[in-house]
Image 1 (cartoon, rainbow, N blue to C red):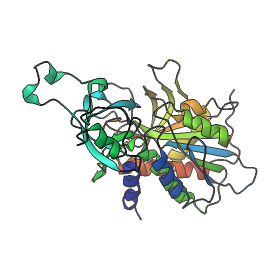
Image 2: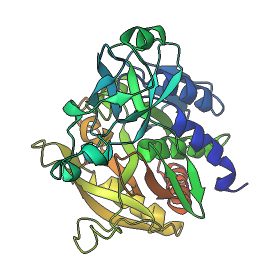
Image 3: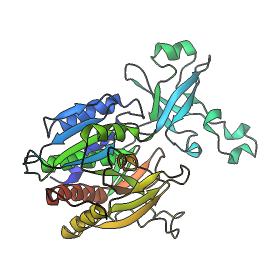
Image 4: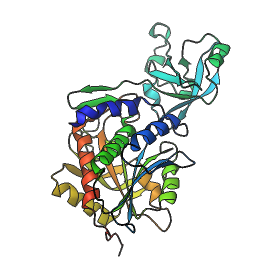
Length: 366
């Protein structure tokens, strides 16, 4: 069975709401999916889903593989008397893509109410307004309600989550959908678990669907404290540099169809001294695995990005970490684009990395 036959799972992952801090629908889904491959699945107090596949030896080392389950989105901050809804960002959606964008306003009962970010009609806009980006503070959502009472009756209140409206499509090798960041990573981990099921493993593999990555990355910290891994991999998307406005800027070698990005260094210039320094020997091991199995990859450093690895590396007395990135276009927008081929590569690389890993890898420094 080819990967294309499993994309219904990815579609369900992308459609399931789960903004940072309100990931419960994703927690339930990922727990159910992980339980197909291991009996050892638990949810910690913060909401991280941890599925552990045991090694053949009881005293084996532990590898943590993290993929964040949460998505960027919004929370309701004010409901007007006339039924229009104002929101606050959860994560970093782009203000410039909001007007006329379809969204789902989620009720307490889990009903998704279709809505759009409103925009002043062209005919009554001033020349200046036609070219300006409307900040989130001045935006509002039209969900078809005529009063605040109607909004309340629908189970929507201040603090209710708002997500992009599901829009999953596959065209040839391209996948187009909301929240490929990072449901692609979650999907890759689940498919890796399927490939590892029943095999003799050299290390314990703790597969973690983390929470709150888009808010603070602290969900992975709690998971790492709980698991106490000897090493960790964070798999996420990475910026594909093959669109016209990015070509020639040489920020990264990642591009659609170019294979998985093996990241050795990352930094976030707007948050000083936040980023990832990958363990050099773990990078060498990952590269060797890719080359041994003839899997396409690119070496990258990332700018303007932090991942779960950025914070897991500081847990306990330090955790050797590495980042993997699936190339993705239009990150943090209502529709992101990636490829089936790169996703397949991510799954194969993770699977072979686990199988090929020495039972006691030397990851020491100096």
